[in-house]
Image (tube, rainbow, N blue to C red; front, top):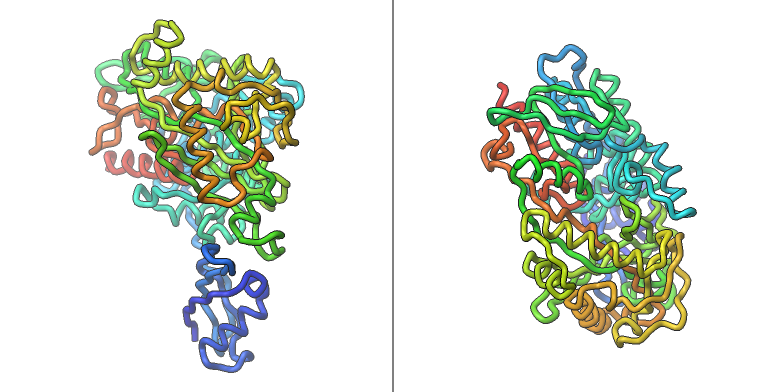
Length: 526
């Protein structure tokens, strides 16, 4: 028979299948030889007390042969001669999962992506890291798989009510992710493994008669009488379909400018701005696991921190244990940093975004202080984001060298005479970050760091380095859509989607949004 059990084990016990099987037998009240196998259904870490515990939900096979995990295999239809087609602009998680959903429904997806395929992107990332040269169309944000491909594949979201989260995880598993994504509380794929999964998804789209075109940048939208008639691309092509999903990501500023110029309604959207902070991983391990040395059975520790400072939220974002800080700019002369981890999370550093919420009023005030005139329109916060990135680039001295300070120096308004070793490959330059960041962001972070140091032993230390600037946390623009059809209010066959439209915040939520729009399009056609 099959029975479900919940076990609470020490890390070294949870790492041993034989020990797990022994505990199952004890709990079931049967001899160990009666337990023929088990599957882990849920796994989480409880580090609230000095003794760290692993919580396991298991399905045990007692006096019967074990079976493999139930792999839900989704079926995709041949759409080569489908009567309906949808152009999807952007091959990030929103666009790819919209395309897969359309294949299930028998609708032909035509994906156009401004960047390169996932393998070719690597050469451009290497140039950016080693030579300080950014390709505006192929970088950490643009290209097959979108920003998520090279920001390490965290598959955790608080937005599960927005769509079918289990289906997203099952699809990642179907296309090559490890089965741990199905049961870990904070599943993670790793930047080294994601490209193979993305490539498998692309092949599925092509095998079913869908299309996926790289180096195909949207430059114009032809519309009349409340509908899109066609889109034009930089290479001179004019493409037509029955519907259009706009899933261009949070960094496609040219798309926001295009929509604004064509008087297609967009809205300014608050976002968060700050820095990326890096500690030696051993400091985070000691704080979170209450130990001097992390035991081998435990993964590198992570954290999630939030605090109110003078009425502003200061919070961690995209925490990467055993990770690397990377240059995520999309244009020359602008400096953005992000973080990622390989699947093993085995680098000696832990980094996280640490950011402060920004409003339209903040941006207006900032430009007034800088004695710069700016139009308070839908692009206001985009221009503000851009201005801070340009300041950071100048402060670093060029070639994407990042301005930085030690945490203690940052918090005490001191310059840093030296900087600790850091994972950021283009390199760091000592700078006073109060000359880079807006005053309200700088002061909020100062208060936040001190507060976090009280919550988390060892966090507030001069061994940590603060690197500017973390500014692409989410889109500074929202593209509105009607609640009943999810289409744009002005264009009935345009469907704004994912992070770039302001409706997602990570791989899973973007993927769910893509699926949701594909289903809505199909529903309106039946």
